[in-house]
Image: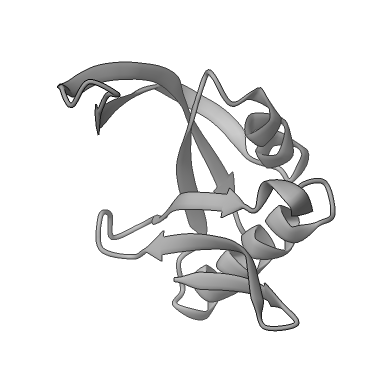
Length: 115
């Protein structure tokens, strides 16, 4: 897990998984505190993830981004991640009435080859 911290306060986080695939690291749960978006926190987290992947000799990073998050997708693509196919994320939560909800959230699988 990668944590972006400033003055003792968490500004963002990301998880880098090396076990899903042998040839690619999986980046997920990337999030930035809403008050700190657009300030380079997400970019710094992604760069840190790439550094960690290379240190473990993983030269590919993959991630999925939901279609409802165009801002995140724009960031990833600006940093060199390219679409390689569709991705459907199964979202589970409990609604305001206490019902368990399970729905599919369409998105895209992105990949970056690291040097």
